[in-house]
Amino acid sequence: MGASFDQIGALDALLELILETTSDADGANPNEKEDGETLASREAVVRRRALRVVNDLFDGDAQGRALVDGAINVLDTRRLYRVVTQPSARSFVAVDPGFAAAAKRYVCFDDFCSCPGFAQVAADADGPILCKHMLAARLAPLVLNTFETKYISDAQYHEAISCRYDPL
Ligand SMILES: [Zn+2]
View 1 (cartoon, rainbow, N blue to C red):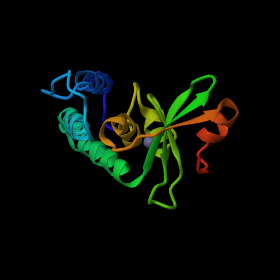
View 2: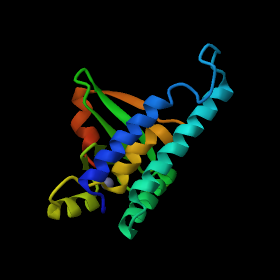
View 3: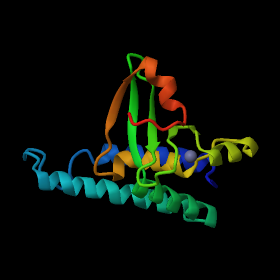
View 4: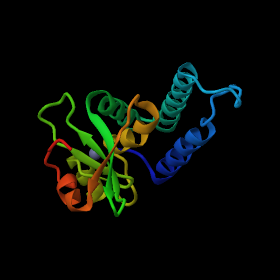
């Protein structure tokens, strides 16, 4: 969790930029109707750019590399999706156990994760920190083939953010 405030700010700005600048397929004729192949290549471009951004930002030291490796592992082995409450529109990314059957659900906000690692580091940190789940949650919409949004009622919110894992 060696990310500094500047790195997190740069990460968020760059990931947003990737989404904005890749909204039309690279080099594709905008008048042409988008077919499946064009969509797939655009997704590949987004994925490649997002992974390059995190590698460039965090590859400077062992902690940064561990963060990136950890986030990729989270994306590979756990199930991530966005949860939005209705009607208040509160939102977080759920990191569910996936294949790791014994694991708990973690909930990620932009500046908070419910994992023990985050709590441990946050206790000693001066500024914002990033754990592997938070980095994975930022990457998920850009690199996963499917990143669903699930809608729950406001009444279900507190149960959903508790670490107990119940399938939503
Ligand atoms: Zn975490």
